[in-house]
Amino acid sequence: MLTSTILLSAVAAIAAAMPASQPIEARAGGPVAKPIPSSCTVSSPLPTSSSATYLPDTSKTSNALVYYAYYDLPADNPEQLYQQCLEQCYGLGVNPPCVAAYWAQQMVVPAGYYGGAGGNLDMACLMYNRTLTAADFVQAPSGQAVTPMAGDIHCPA
Image 1 (tube, rainbow, N blue to C red):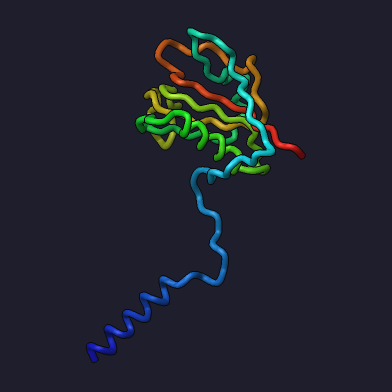
Image 2: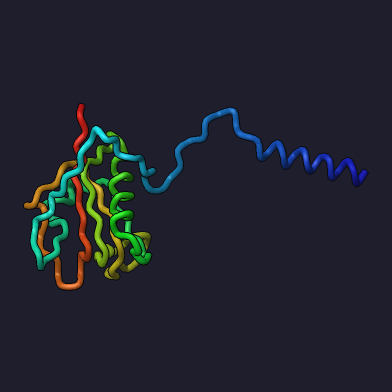
């Protein structure tokens, strides 16, 4: 009897671990990073300045914001994290469209983000459904928008 119970339990465990015959539905969470093809180009819309940093002007960009994420992590490799932000934007695809991304450290987390009070400074990845221009940015307060990077993704039709 003990042998049959163990055998039945083992068969049930194996059956539960087998792949499903139906495709798995997409799950909630952030967009999946998708490599940007070499046929696409990425250009920076950030204003150029040797002494100032810039962040998106919410009065001009909030209607175009399609996804945003804030991370309380050390940014050991900002370029790699920016690239991931761009690839997540590209991974959103066309519904909603995402054609521009902005990444920076020391960004103010908005109130209500995951139920929090907001106001703390974290790393941010902001994604937009339209290309950005230098006019879409404002000078950041001192100590904010550290290492900002932005990119407009241009792909042939």
